[in-house]
Length: 275
Image (cartoon, rainbow, N blue to C red; front, side, top):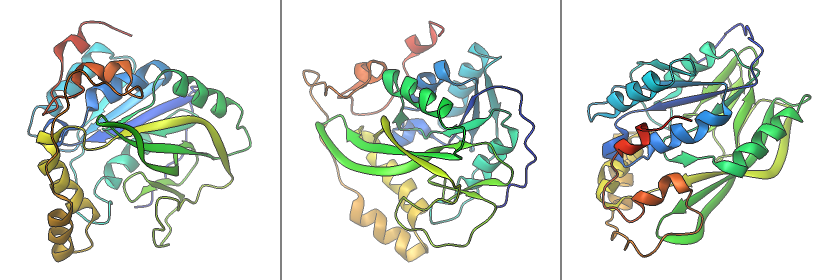
């Protein structure tokens, strides 16, 4: 999906873009994710992909709390495969961005505290680059161990013809037909490799939501219907909830109250205070 947008910058440094569908039933801590990025983004553009589980209501609530900082859109998911199901929404949001840089974050990711400060500093130091390659750690509430560490790009300069491909894990200048190679295929040169900040990915943290999480991921990952079913059957498995006595040290403060819960739920107290 070629973007073809003409960039009209407004002098701001960084916009966050975010799209979600049925985050509650999928076990995505999306409210915590959004609130964690608001302090360091000049603007946050949210999209609901057609939720039916109450996710949309909480996105509206966030937008009403921060009307000057948050824009909300309603571009529905287009069912497709190979992680392309959200490219339409992300490319729409990219076209709406007026900042110099864009940060794409997903519903089970957190960039908190010192990591956020470091990311902003790296952006300010990268005048001659179009993208920052950094670490994204797969984590779980159940262990302090890193499940998976990959180098990826989620921070890109807002340049003409910038497009998302394969659901925000790849970005291109214009449309490319290259096959995906793991999580490292990008076409926004020149890229700068940095190690100072880490994006935390909290994957499959709520056992009660794992079935729905696996169903959605199987749909997004599959290359055809048979492959989709095969992936779902292979990866679906139960996980025991944690005890409240164990809180891994890597968990940000905003997530600690829901560590060990069977299902993800939105805490109303998150809406009782402003940034």
